[in-house]
Image (cartoon, rainbow, N blue to C red; front, side, top):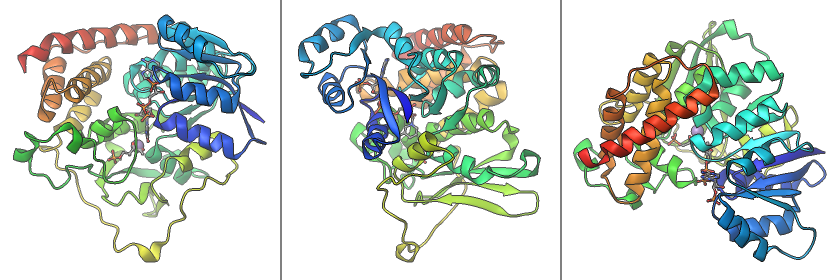
Length: 385
Ligand SMILES: NC(=O)C1=CN([C@@H]2O[C@H](COP(=O)(O)OP(=O)(O)OC[C@H]3O[C@@H](n4cnc5c(N)ncnc54)[C@H](OP(=O)(O)O)[C@@H]3O)[C@@H](O)[C@H]2O)C=CC1
Ligand SMILES: CC(=O)[C@@H](O)[C@H](O)COP(=O)(O)O
Ligand SMILES: [Mn+2]
């Protein structure tokens, strides 16, 4: 029986994780759940999974939750960062599913690693902002870090049994999002609803906008760089609009190993939870005879400026990816709230990165202060757009 904490249980990844847990009650048990504001869903999850501890965004929400609890055993209720950390380091927990969105996931994930918990990592922002420090913490604590992100799960599955020195290239696939065939000129006028209309994946709002701008793929290149300890020049991005091949690894002998499947996050989540075993997921099996074509081409870096910005941030290194990530989080929120147009996202990131001189980061606490700086700078620059 694997005992789990799910950070971000009310989100898209959190809900899919709990579907896997519910399907395998003999394998997985929930110890702790954390939510942000979605108390109604959290109450349903408490009723179904009977966690020992739950946490919500703040004390007001915790007080409201106490009045909504279902009949039965009463969980410990916590709030804020203390609650996230409490859930992450709960003594009964063996594995933490890191499924909070954004840099808010950094501290609880770091705390879980330091407490010796294995990690199923969905929260890519942790590796984008502080990849080298996280990988050092993972090595120091001797814990396992399993990728949940579909591309990284595909790479993980394609490198098993192979020597890292035999890798020629990692090829991350990208759907191209809803604007793959939209001319740059028309991107000036796209709406929030247009950007949230991802062709292949059903996901949370922030990552869906990141997919539309292709910042998601930029974040994933940085994520792969740290997760698989590869030189960034060995990481390619191929647009693959069908999202059937989830990523590939090319070896020095010219062989390419890929992982394929119906686009459904339950598959990579289940593999991270049950590794090295495989469990049923309910994911629709792939019928290759029903696919008309699998196509691939290079991304347009002028149109998808955010992908180029991620390459620039990775090249600058040190604190720059954390600043880029912070500016992106502010920009996506502003776009979703109707404060800036879609192309304002990349513009705000450029202006924030231009205001920053990269410097070395030697602790996760320093990363948090750079993240705060990046957010404050991006907010200050918002009216200049
Ligand atoms: N969705 C997907 O298919 C994929 C997601 N990922 C990554 O996984 C992570 C989660 O994505 P996704 O599930 O889509 O996101 P969602 O927005 O659907 O869910 C986010 C979760 O985090 C909670 N949350 C948000 N902000 C805070 C905060 N400040 N403090 C505490 N909790 C918070 C939310 O609570 P509430 O809703 O209750 O307010 C919710 O439970 C992201 O990093 C994303 O990039 C990676 C690959 C695929
Ligand atoms: C499901 C998943 O892993 C997402 O990160 C997905 O990759 C988004 O699709 P894009 O390829 O459009 O970014
Ligand atoms: Mn992905």
